[in-house]
Length: 332
Image (tube, rainbow, N blue to C red; front, side):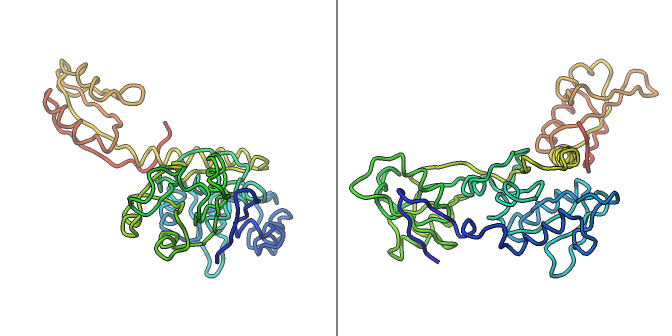
């Protein structure tokens, strides 16, 4: 699918042309509002509607996102052929949506929370609240062109641009002086990187993570529009604020646990001050006396990626019996 757009015209993505009311999810959301007994989204025990969380139904980050939700205690079973899964322990339903639509359903629909990319939020122009960055899918939305043909993104103003992000691209190129004609923005739903080689574009706007695909297509990056990663968002008008806050607390606790490990070691009491300098902990380490009064046991949380180096430094000042444990979840 290819759509031509000028920077002087209003640009729509394919998903923006489909009103929420005509979406196959509209009836599902309406049933949830009424807490209907026949809905696949069953109401809570008190008859109120469940909190809805939208996640990508497929894609390379879908599995990692579900792992975070499970780690936060939102365990669920997704029935075959259904895009809704009710959680076991909380009145929460997970709604599986196309990634490009999540921000709009949170911003304009009845979905309380969502997990999507910052690039999707900006492209869909959704009015949502960003609660937390997950550190997943970090990349940049960049202007790319055939190697050696252009030195700067401004040189593509007035030329042909192919992208899956027409709204962002239109906004970006509108700031550059025109070179005779308006920048011609063409929307394609995928395989953006081949547009220049196939004569459809002079340059493209696409996501770049490692740059492998870009270089394989004979392209180079000549401008960065934005850095992006996966974030948790919420509906500004959610009726489930307390539950949203509880879920967010759980998610943060799980992410903190995954980034840290629990370290325990024995240290001569005379070296304790030096050991605390190496492992200060969140507020302070837990220090317990041993049978030998000249020694103490220390338990402290350390960053997992620094754990080995910390153990080396502790050994140098006389620490013994160093053990590292994984942390499943926590609240700091």
